[in-house]
Image (tube, rainbow, N blue to C red; front, side, top):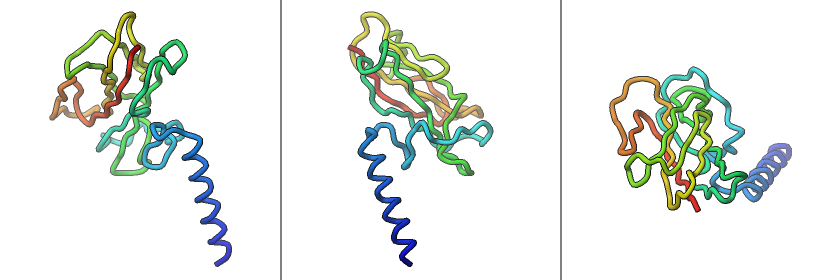
Length: 148
């Protein structure tokens, strides 16, 4: 019984330490975003979450903001990183050239861009039943990027 108490205490201290050392935007379902397992063939995700959820370009070297897409799946591993997500951007539900995002999920503000933009990613390679206002198809996650 004492062993279980010590293990539980250690687990609670570990969770508290991680929570204090990392901002809430770097966590998803209790995982640090970069530590989620990577999925390559797990079917279509039921939902997609982007990490960080909100970012300010001025807080990143050269204004390059690395986003990661994490999918929630019906089968294990779940949640898991989506290495082949489709990325896009929009502003006020319309396409924009104010920021760019590459195939690895790294977004950057264009010269002279200002305001808040929506970065989106979809992990659904299968049928497209619903297209979002920003043009994404399938299960889609969004995040906000502020440009100076």
